[in-house]
Image 1: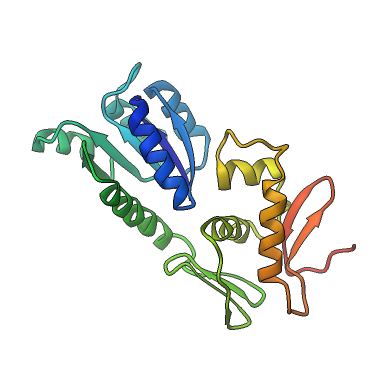
Image 2: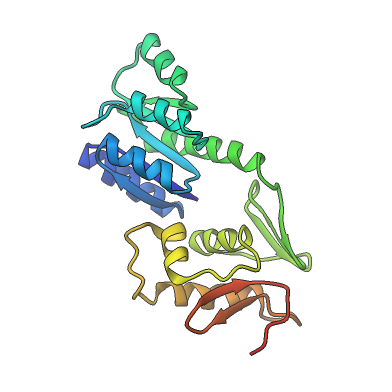
Length: 227
């Protein structure tokens, strides 16, 4: 999933970003409220983790203005304030959950999973292309009824492609959504993961679903393509 972290404490950013990336999420970071609000509005995130006390514009204002603009992305608000009144203010501003600092990463991760699960429930519960199926709830992938074991990043890449079937996805798009906005498009990391994914998804099956379009990008499709 693609997550926006808006936090001005460098140590917290490093701690959270590292942990979320290890779980396979792409994480963009902003260190102030104005930029965080801009990124949250113009980009399609699955979750926004938003600190309450931020330079330039505080988290309450950012959350309220995003909701006013129709941004429905789930928001997990972080704060050092633990009074009931502060929690109510955050929830009333449009936040979906509230976590008080300091926190254990395991608790943050559990809340992230709950919010992402809730978001997945509003989308197609099972993604299907031909005989390939991916269940976002269980994170199970099968083809022709046969289970396919994927690494965390392979799963993230396949889920992104299955949410965009029959579309040509450029290296830049894949990098930004599966890694983050600072991904180097000149890196061969995507080629490596596509190769690994193709070996697991297509090898041993009559029809190839994952294709490389030279000079354009990659496509997951059940339609015949000219080679």
